[in-house]
Image (cartoon, rainbow, N blue to C red; front, side, top):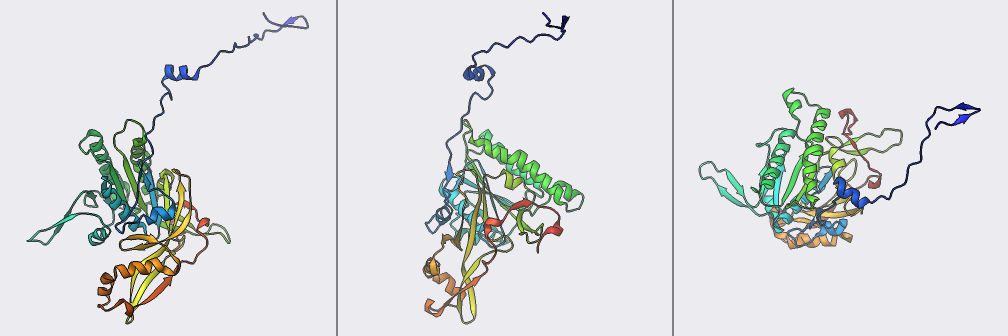
Length: 379
């Protein structure tokens, strides 16, 4: 019945109060099947060790290794330790029964160095051509099998399809070196190098396809675990304001940084930030190790982020130490290899030299930004 005001009926309907009902969330989940089952496999890590028998990278950074079914992004300037880490991961994968899958965009691979770092393979020499075939417990995909960002994604998805169908019944560890060196289909077909097109392709291939397929392995019911460690090339953006700081940026836009669970940064923002540890004999110098900075800039697995120093050698990482005691010990243990390069002789004839290039502002000031116009890059 309508209310009356001053004797005149009010035609507005009267809303009856809603009766409160007891709500059972469990029944709602059972009836709707929406969000009713949340099952994840226990978190699994691939421990990182090297052929020297240590786990210096994990000890220095506090990481247990690299997490299963996640993307680990590795960035930094050249010669700062990125490839050293990637090879240690490959070695660790073989030692733990995980199949390494090398996805190589730059044919700067040194098989001799890989063997020095403990990666196992066999060789066969063609007696007629002299060509060497490398084989072992790994898969190797290079530019002869893909020519664009999209085709690289197709190769990775093919392997995941084979794994899902049971034709490749192994846990896989994808080792990608690197993003920032190949173009997308559109850039190639139009004969134009366009950073935005390439960034868009990376977003489609990795952000919307490859990485989600890696991540879904965390859910209960997925038999295999997959690991992915990816090296991103970098560029440096000029300060945007007066007295501002330059910023380290990953080539190819924000897709890889945003979709990674762990982000590892080697070196400084504007330079490598390394110290070359050298031996010198008769005016000849050889770098036997490199001290580098490593920063866990993003960690959505354990939540711990830190910055420290570590020493990279031809055989893997060793701890940093006061007065380079451990680095010099490493040199002495492998002196035969280094002294051959110096023409032989005794280690007592060499002097130790350090070429320090570590100076820069604090690494805590760096930021990762989306790659933009090439005019913004500091050469």
